[in-house]
Length: 345
Image (tube, rainbow, N blue to C red; front, side, top):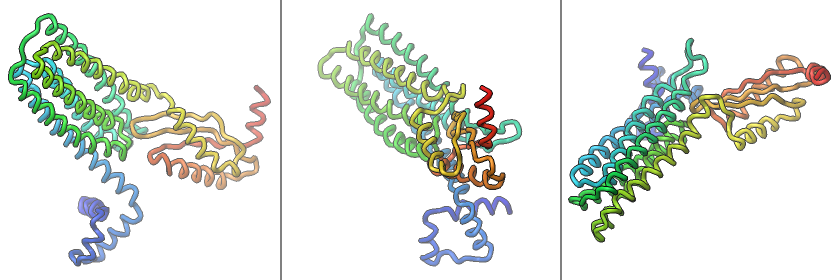
């Protein structure tokens, strides 16, 4: 019964439901009408759940596409003997690892808080992003080593047109998937999926670069271009890793949100400034897709608890209108106590 109830809830969130009813394929019953009423009252919860399920599907699609691209590039790289193509295969294998990590981190990080994890599992995404960057650094160093070795001992590239074809095909596949993953990452505010989308877009650019370099080698006969392009790709990949590290690691040590985000949050609080005296001890941090905000709110000494509580609810709802997953904690402080505390300092 519970399973049917959940399935029905997901069904009634379907954007095509109205057309389904209009065409006469669906006739409401007392049970189904109750489901519609339930969904109407819990629309936000159901929408979030559907978005999470969609995120898992997109993450799995990324795993499948990356597996295909890695196999193609690796086989062609070995057949052609191109270090640039092999470097691209290594790069794509990291994209595959990132996709796998993103797939599992999205599933885990969106679990509800439990007894052992009262703040949820959001930091799983940040951990996965940090692991991805370390993998990229290792791969970049390995690619540079192989390219230097090939510069010292150059070799001819066999079947270059096969490599060119695979590079452009791989770029096309990853471009389509990257756009899908990026869109879903924005909807879920997912750090892991955003990192994965950036991985895929980087793979598009590097694949096109390798394809063009192979074309130039074929037309000019300058085999030295192959390892040179490989080194440039490695440097670019490591630069990408540094960018990802700056985004994924700070939340693990509870770094504050960006200055722009904090200013936006403070402006939202100021929308209610006619109902309180001031706010202070403003703090923020991020855990996966969730922003945590806490501060002290100084209110008139004569304000009763119910009114203060209602004010806190209003501020919280205002913040969550712009930061949908924000967790807000407000400490109420009477004006006279704030004044006495400042006098003692």
